[in-house]
Image (cartoon, rainbow, N blue to C red):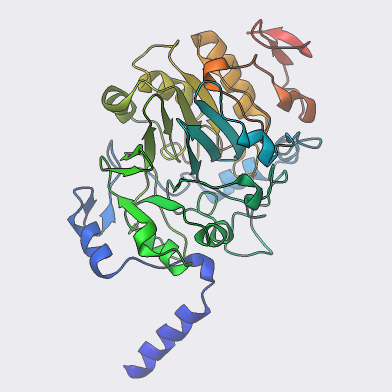
Length: 391
């Protein structure tokens, strides 16, 4: 048996460092005490969910590798990136709240004099390997070192497009605090983050950092970085509340009734950052469509369409699903207009203040194919839309 243990240890040693580390010791004991952990896995709210693509591989291949659909899954030109500088971010927001979407689910939130960085991914690929895996479709808006000091980094879960080892290693050399769901701290410690800078939370637990209250709230997703998915790390959405403002970041999630409960307990929000990309009929339980995302925003705001602003996230940066590249932005814009929801449409890296939201700007239209019916004509859209269809 000694030989088998040596072989197992050797295989673990060969694993990429980006796989991270499994929880153990007191961290694992705490996971086992969680009311959301049963029979060796974390359970989703709203009942069981499919975490693997449903349907046959043949059906998925027909959709994913269709030549016409493949063309629409990528931009046709260079994605516009706002040339953000440290000087831009050094100016305090007039309203006290400013958001800067850095791509995918990475957002810098400046809230009541503090700075929160959600799901920072500055790597070239969302993959454990530098030579393979989904590659970013645009450069990062500014170097991580040019971002300036951050009070707290918030991680929603441990998938590669949300938890990036090179980015975490760079941030480990700062004095920032990391707020993460249960078990995720094992990865960060493995990459050099000291335990005293970790705040590891179960759903409905809160912590105070630099005058902000951060609360881990439920989400409907799954976890895993290695060759096998142990479900030993939790996934979460997050509420961050300052003295005057509060924001919500969905992480990755399917739609579920819990949004109304989160809104009732912690809302309304000055801004919601909602995942609405990388959706598919093959995995309907774990990612939201634009329709579901707008519905979740309204749930979080207690049904009040006039409350707060919606920032669409989890799209534009990586090609992770069969839908057209521009569809998340375009469809959400149409739905937000229909429901009377204020939607933020910043270019990547463009700071904006939800309390003084600029006019809707469908920047993606300039670098993508128009849908079959043409672009929708909306009175809330700035500029001269290249459109032929009414909503």
